Length: 503
Image (cartoon, rainbow, N blue to C red):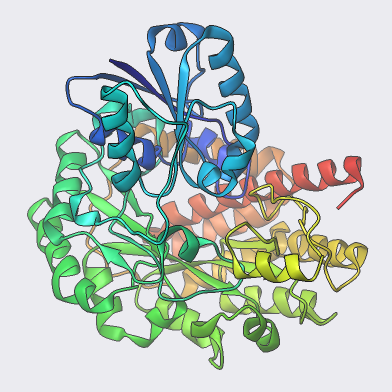
């Protein structure tokens, strides 16, 4: 059996880092971990190939080679999915699809031959068994049943070309103990975090190492600290020992809830394991908005103090923010700007509230007759799929002002400088000098220091970090490049919104 695994193209978004990747001659931020995991679940005797449309074109020859095309996608890849499915139908190759997009919107894809919904560890074996017996059905789903991730195989990383990616990825757990109103993670993966064993995590790291990867690794868990007890007792100690044995080949990034700041032992262990960046969902500086969306760990706390606590342990905090809650006051825009600048969060993703299927917010707005369409999957493209309480025009005007302020060269470079001035990393990672990094520095000098607007602020950060914080000079250049990407993406979004002139 010949299986072609296809990962559809993603549009330019905040997290695509499209414009930043060009500086280091990479084509995508991360490989498609879901498809690589599915590939490892397929019979070993099958011939498997993978095409990530974010790193290369999908050719007709690829489709003609295959007996089946396996697709996995998120909602933001919907348009690319339609194109791929139409091409498969024209050529006559059957399509098998799974992943978040299909699990939550399967009614839209009747033209796909086989839909493998929910978690592949449960539904994929059922499909494969029926396929062997010649009676494969159109749809396979599981309800209120969660996979045992201790049975999940090591992803087939050998199917990708490492040189195209800026970072690798790995998954330790699924599920989140919190149930924020706007988030669909609990409907997809449940509220009780399910975790792999330490041996599995180390085996996956070892495979990446053996295949030659050196650099960043992203733990894609939606809340890495969902099970803090196991993390501290088993997982982090194992990673610390392995990293020491392997001379620190990786640095780690992950996502966690803000209550990470309450556990100093946990933060110390994460830093010892070489975690240097953590994404946190801040959502709003407005307490009533946090109450509205049931953001439990964020309520009744000094959020800026919590952010700075994590930063003080040597980890950069990236954060997500949301505008458009019913309880947002007219002052929310200035509050948001003030919070982001004061907290020194360089990478601040500020998006508009949307209600994905499967969320408590979707169900509430459905009852209130306020839903107008499905989400685009990109909460920074100025779209909303419901009628907000605040007048839409005022909401968009304020949102644009937030973005244009926090990512203006003066504000952005100033925020980066303040972060670096107080940043004291203690990680022991070995810096792997690569030509792509040196090339990125040279490109930044030309593009950001000569051509781009705001070059004065670029040079001010450049020389300050070079002479005052030389160890952090590479990170200063990285932040400069990130800022360029963010400005380009939002510029595109605002131009597209103005052309459409509709919510």
